[in-house]
Length: 179
Image 1 (tube, one colour):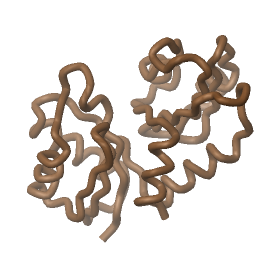
Image 2 (cartoon, one colour):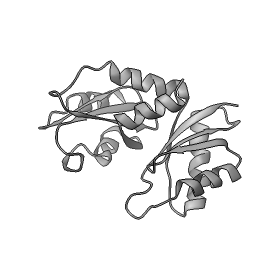
Image 3 (cartoon, helix red, strand yellow):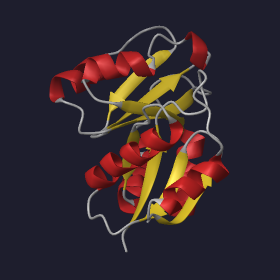
């Protein structure tokens, strides 16, 4: 049975709280198997007979929306796609000086070429970005909460639903669930 890694958007922030143990139980009750989570930010591993990341995303969003009582968008990758994302990010030389923090905004589809060009040209103090297929590398030397390169801005630029993760978390997920 195929396995997938889901990145849930905007859970456990702004009053949209879910307990991971309850989330796992809800997904298992809906027919997903081997459900596992990593930290509280909505990183989920699961198996399902569904055969595409898009189909899994739609079903997860439906199930979790009904269960949680609010819209839960799921950005889904196969273990191979997760590994490829980490490799793509690792292939980008530093965009800023040493000590910059790296984040990945995972998108629900390929970033359009015009949006990729706008992100690649992003040049604000302490902020740089690179579009890498269906995700965006963001590098910051300023505190995350002070950045103007927010998830909302990336969504406006790309026209895609995205969710951010610290690269350290994405690496940990790849070590656990990547292929």
